[in-house]
Image (cartoon, rainbow, N blue to C red):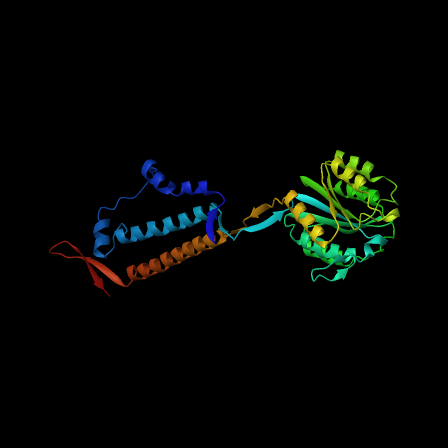
Length: 346
């Protein structure tokens, strides 16, 4: 911890009392007074002095200077600098579009243990690993089938996004594929985004057969909103019918928004695709740094008050002792031979 000042320029007032003493002439005033020619002799006979001793003056100046220093330091508002607090600020909003249509239950992919699994299970593993590496991004997840649904809103909690991805299942959004509507929902979500970079990654294993807005038309709107869309086609390209992969449409969607189209026929290729996307969509982590400050001026105020009260109490005590000694039962007389004043204890 370090000590700083909110108003350090006030410390320039520290030598002010010395400047006043040295450069400001003393105040002169005239007032009626009674002249006693033998007053000094009388004081000397009683052991009194008209002026304070030099040690007493030095002690007085030291105490007053200390009080003044504490007051000026307190006015400068001393603060203890606490350890800094750092927070990462998202520089990109990344929206994942995941197809949950019926064809995603085809068991033609493998998992990390090289066991045969359905397509969605493979996507969860690869995409989950991709998500947790997106430090510095806000990530959202939209799943789609007959209609698109928001599964995870934009959040920097990447582990939460991964857990909610694990909770998805084939057919939970309907058996068909509405990629165009999913892109449209993503555009609506980006309306409230102020991130400098906006990216969608759309994964599907079939052609669009349920959207009210064609994917290419939705892509043009996304381009006008400065949203980049990368598309991933997974599965068997030889499939026919509604489950056939429309590579031309996916490529058109990506190229319209200055994105890229990828083809993943197995788990290895799917992992390579997300590694490639990790390289394309580089993460720029912007850090906000704040250093808390804790005011401690009250410590100096309390010290000045305590020192001032202690000085006053000491002065009163010493004064009473001197007063008691001065007013003890004594009598003065003039020596008839030397004409000197003499103190006679009674």
